[in-house]
Length: 150
Image 1 (cartoon, rainbow, N blue to C red):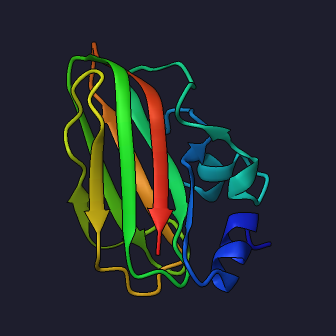
Image 2 (image 1 turned 135 degrees about the vertical axis):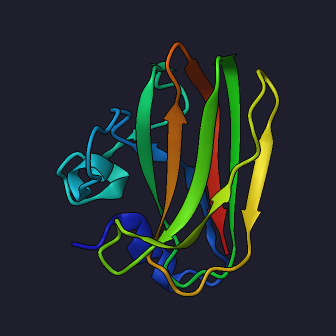
């Protein structure tokens, strides 16, 4: 089943904008599709990253539908930034999981400062992944997590 936002995106002439969603659960080991959509088969059935509460140490993945788009903007703001973290965006192969090419680093977050990262090298990938790694003794609380694609 193709997620609702992906279906809309295929027919959109002017792109889309929406909240970044996922399971908000840290993944240990190999990433699987159920880690992205909670085994629902639909990215739109997951929970927003913004307002999800504190992300503690671990690795979190969020699928962003990009079918038919040539550019992607990701805008994040964290109300709380404790310790260190790494955030990247990457295109996926046809399995919608495996990284394609090189990941793009997302602007490092500081508390209450909005940061937008733009990727203009999309080449027909259906899904890009937002990967958030929160290091030990660290935490992030997002109050804004939006994506737009054109």
